[in-house]
Image (cartoon, rainbow, N blue to C red; front, side, top):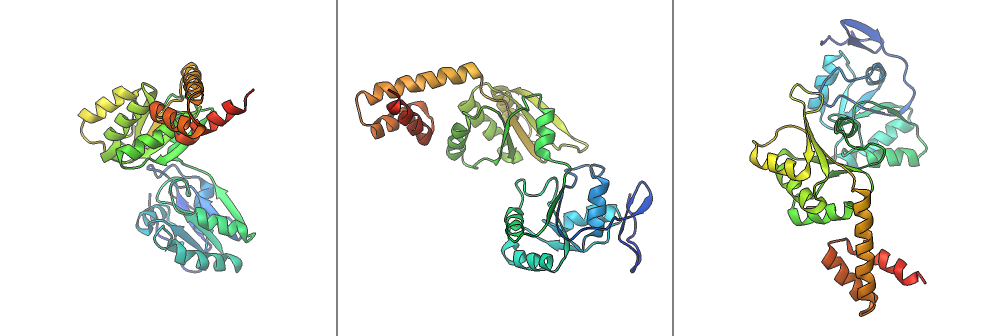
Length: 303
């Protein structure tokens, strides 16, 4: 439902449900606005009012954001703010805010700063004591988490894993001990390889692959990691935005793994130096060297 922007001189407004509404006055400062991740209906009235009343909207891709604003009849100017121009734009944005400007920050989709540019800008705005306001809304991370059917009391968002298998397995090994559900973004062309590496490192943990969330072709496939890896290795390449959710380690298995690690360290420490023992056990167990080192220190300090 698109509507023409209001005539010059009219109060800022937006259109929804075939009606035009006047935007509420906006306080000066930087306003971080979450926008739909696919379905344009997933936006709040507060977000629409903020976008309409702002002096300008800082957008990761103005072409994408133009569609959203046009859909709701919002005439606010768009300014590009992305990883390639952020260093040049930040001083200009800060100056406008110092002068009492009202600016909105959005990403291509979802909540800004979550795997999107904006963190450094917010950090500098906060450091100067300028006001920052968050207008919450859609998030691919949370949408996938609640659909996965996995524990939600603790979760760790990693973003994108390294593109190369060796580095990816190394990072997965570091994440393996986290006692919570893991959430990743992944490229469609790397999905099958990523799931295969996850199965190799994490075993048969339960997982879910959420694709095109809130869009017409939304799908969520659930299963053990080896099953998911096999499916996507044999299926056509997945398309669209993908979130992978992996369940936490089994508590008893984690405890057993810890006991095995301690036993290996005690055996090695009885024969070689701390440094050599850590190197040997880390190589044999596949655990991160710094984690093994920290545990070895604890064991040497225990009477």
